[in-house]
Length: 63
Image (cartoon, rainbow, N blue to C red):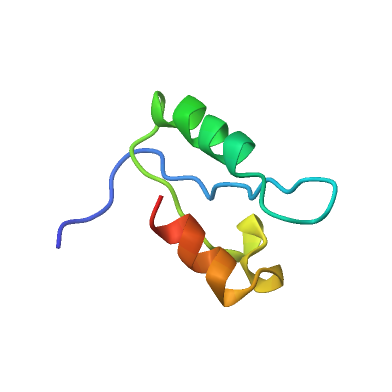
């Protein structure tokens, strides 16, 4: 595997007022960022991964 190159920021997790992942805003954020970067770090500590359930983490990894 080659070295990572370019900008690869951690993606923030968007939550709604009930504390659930706001999928629409999350996907909008990824769409916006994808135009300027080379990759994303998902489910890191910056993206609130430790606060999410296993099912929520799986949802984020496969979209």
